[in-house]
Image (cartoon, rainbow, N blue to C red):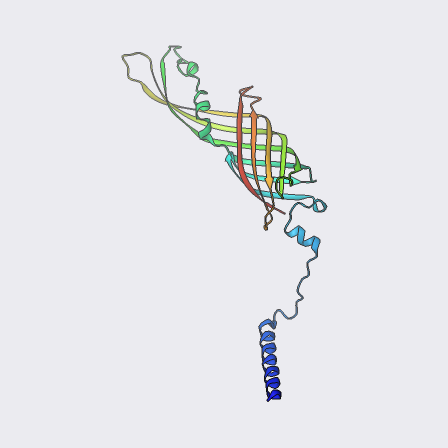
Length: 238
């Protein structure tokens, strides 16, 4: 009886082994290929976590806020990096400033007769509001606060190109109804940018998340004008 139990057990083990083999058996097409073996260092490159021995890194992604932009970052070393953003400014945040750019003293004077007229602002629209920005950043490890966290600060330069369309009415006397008019203003300006932020990269995927705040200063069209900007974003790191 005991021998029968042993024989039955061996029989079932052989069936199980045959079943497992049939599940992993290679197809004729794949049987000629070898399974790639990835070393520890190469695995780190495929899924980077900013290890000091693996620099340089690169990151590309998207930034939401002011502005909404595509963003690229190059990490040559652990502490230094270069970032470039290109996109569209959040024009709605500049409504008061853009409204003040309408020169009523110029538009209210007839260039032919030099007669004064009363101008009434109606509305404006940012037809285009593009920007380009480059920044050099210094970053340091903040793993004492949270693993994968880096703080950074730096300086850069921003270029802005804006086209504004204004709707207004003007009248030359109280006896005449106001006449509807439109005018377009194109502005190109640039200036320095100061930035502070933090970046978090402790994920199972090769991505980093960041939040940053910037201070832009106009150095061309409206010298001395300051504006806080900022946003949040994600980059794929490779």
